[in-house]
Amino acid sequence: MADDQIPPYRITSDKFAARYNGPTEVEMTDEQRSIRNSIVESRPRTGISGPFGPWIAVPPIAGPSQELGKACRYGTSLSMRESELVILLTGAKHKSHSEFDIHQGEALRAGLGLEVLEAIPRDDEFSLQNVKDKVIPLLKQGEREVAIALFAAELLETSTVSGETYNATKEALNGKDSVIVEITSIIGYYTYCAYTLNVFNIPSVPPKK
Image (cartoon, rainbow, N blue to C red; front, side, top):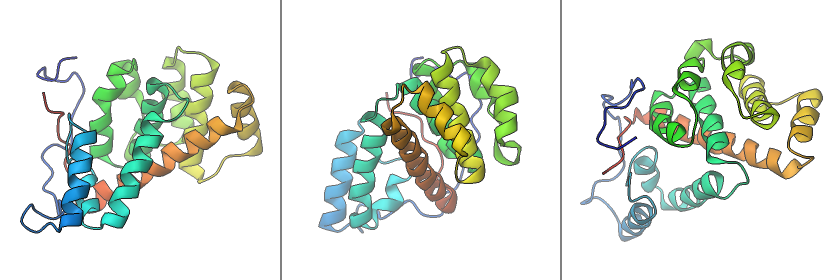
């Protein structure tokens, strides 16, 4: 999908009025400006969008947050399709319309179908059972993708997973506990992003051309 096309998915967060977007250019300290420049260089399509503006207000938080985000997004063994599915489930659970909207386009580019995006239960409708009923039947990539989605949904709903779920997920991931660490880390990081977006009412911003 080209960036100048109207997206095929519904956007609900682009008109939000932010409570706080972080320090302005005039207000920035040298340390904040250095962090800002580093983020812009690493994110040429999106720049300072999403949670990064507020984070820049506190450089000791912004710098490590940026690095953790890169690791969770690009440094795991999950495919982009799998990662984006986990991120969308996280945004849906935490009622973060901005997080969900920001990642819908990325999810489509990664190969998730529009029908999957539309089926994800959001806000008060989010539950493990609704994910099982509405999303799982649409996942066509096999046992691994289903296991990742079910693990994520259970963790998001209950803040933990049962021994049965842990063992079933591990089996689907070829016995690799390390992949469960990756999934849990992605959920944790994007929960942090969702809270930041929600608290400061940050709107979604389309990627730059």
